Image (cartoon, rainbow, N blue to C red; front, top):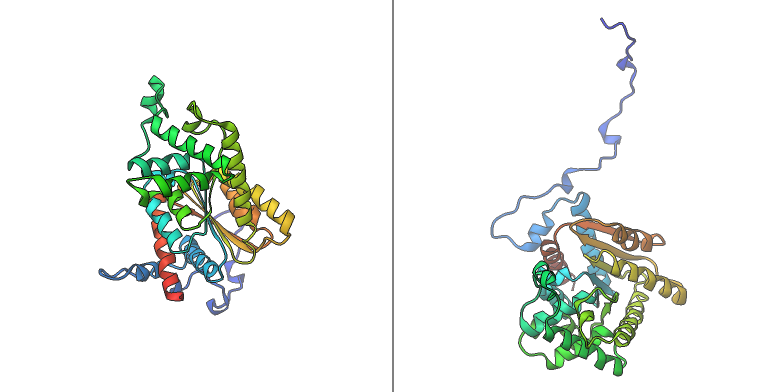
Amino acid sequence: MSKYEQIELQAVKRYSIKKRYSKVDSSRLSIPYHAGSSFLKWFDSLPKILIASDLHEFVDRIVAARLKEKPVILMMGAHVIKVGLSPIVIDLMRQNVITCVATNGAGIVHDSELCLFGQTSEEVADGLADGTFGMVEETGSFINTSILDGHRQQLGLGEAVGKRLSEQAKGWQEHSILGNAYAHDVPATIHVAIGTDIIHQHPDADGEAIGATSFRDFRIFTSQVAKLHDGGVVINFGSNVIMPEVFLKALTVARNIHKHVTNFYTANFDMLQHYRPRVNVVQRPTLTGGKGYSFTGHHEIMMPLLAAAVKEKLRLAQ
């Protein structure tokens, strides 16, 4: 017999499970996949619990946005291109799902190289050791010349490079996000940080042209953000600093001018959840209405999954 006092459990008050709210019930459980079934049946078989439930909900937000002709803005880091996802982005633009694409300066490098040469992404360590990193002449000359021409025509940076890729490039045009964006009248904006991209190392780089065209892209991007009110969607794939910061500034300008830019939906997709995407994309922008989502996983899995689900749900809704 213990020498310490013990609570008497006979005094506890119990109640029926019929009166209790349960976070999990049988209707939300997963359904085993049947071989030979469809993707949509597989997607619908996911449990309606936690992140799987969020993914179902976010897919529905995208579908609802397009049915209402609200914008779906894709912000992305250049790794989306490097892991082979350009065809997915291009398909979503052609299907009128993505209505605006925004990325950093590295995006034009990888997009242009894939379009012009069918290859991209050099071995940085090897090139850094002997000073050849980023010094491929064709890449620097094509992009810097495109930017300078675009500056003279008062185009945005993404528009300038996309226009030239669409009209002049030979070889792999079907893989160019910028070229296809220009051809399909989808705004593609490039948000440059001077000194971060290999094209800035080249003698034909023009700081005035780069700055002016990228600033014009900020204004184009902000115009798209201003249309998000009441149902629009913003998706961030893998941009940890540049696009979350640009988005926050674009949103405050849009609200300053148009007042009501609320009740929209955002999501961050990445293999790690970083501070700026979490705060500047998921949390702060939706405090006045809407909802933010966070999904953790590799781009090369998550983007095809999201795209397929959206296309199937749109097919059923139309």
